[in-house]
Image (tube, rainbow, N blue to C red):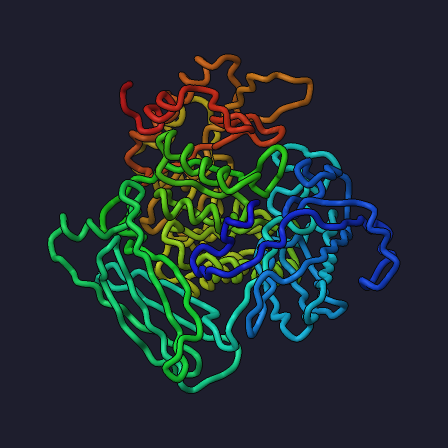
Length: 586
């Protein structure tokens, strides 16, 4: 990605330095090397931030790679009193040395980490950065999402991603700086919660000035004292009182109104740091059997998105590609996306915020249950929530999918405890959004009941869900997908029911010799359109559902059940897809 695409869109500083681009690289399958001073051959070059398995990295080796080494020489473009080194994501365990000094260690393949490298920088000299990435391809007890443990992708799993796969960058800072910023929209009071934490040298004379604007209009300009390096305040906006005026500031997919923010940190009356940010007024909640956006029932029209590209895997080929994915989702008539088994790049969330697209964020699964697996998942999920908490586009958190990693929920209490623990932890970390404990079936602790049902017969779907006594019929008798929808002791308590996976119609206009995957098949584009229309008509008209999520956005390797081809070419005219998604005549 270009150095002009700022990687942390909700806490922006003018000065920063991208370290993306050409790095020296080496595989280490025999684990010969322990330190950067070892005789590593550095026989390859790689384009960071693309993983070595993908072609855009310049390597394109999809074999097993338990250890990868990276080296980059650079000179500082900016100097501050402090310098922070950032990694967007490294899969799975990273050790980082700068100028021979170990500066960071991090476990977790989908979340960011950083290190203050001020004390190891060389004055007036070239800096040498070395990264070791360890990623055991056979380890099923780590959060790995859709990354296959077999050599070749099979069924619904895809090529692995090893090593660095998001932006590496440097940031000059003041000796005391704004380290953390969290926004919490408080819809009922027409307020914004603003939580600020200062990092670096501890001072007792810190204040922060917060300015909020909507376009050219200044909505708030307040200054707060930091106590213990922290300020946590509510900013009250002027409530116009009537709906038409209130809606002028509310964020939704139809009107994605963002409020620009500028925060200035002062120490002893002098400016220490200044950042730009944004937030929004919106609420995501549950009321009886409906999902509520901004206090009103809001039908969810989601599409399942794996977040892969054919030549770059989990890393978008460009920032424009991320924006295009959001635009295509909206152009197909969807108002939201379920990012499946992936913590997406913050730049995608930025475009979803700015263009107006709801996002369900889902934790990538581990596939073997153990205390170690759950500890790893817990750590990474907590980091993901912390990183993405302030994005208005995110409306639902999903820690588990289809009992992956907890396969014996009906029989083993420890598996059930894991789901319930992460549900309650997520609700504790963020009380402002609904949480689905385990999406698809076998629900216990959950705010929304998600059902996965790939029956390709629209009439059978209609008969299954248009029932007069859904609790008895669906929960006790029919059991979509052949699985219990709720576990013993956790009856359906009236939560919204969302058909969170269905469809999956396979149609590959570029028919090849390789086996392909889909839940149902059609042989022509008109056949795809008719089947899609029939399914969406039933799902849109079923009163039981508070929304749906169609599988899927784009073909992904052997899965050819996308509405788009893998390169994002539509299989049908976008206007026809949109009309069918919204169940309106064209």
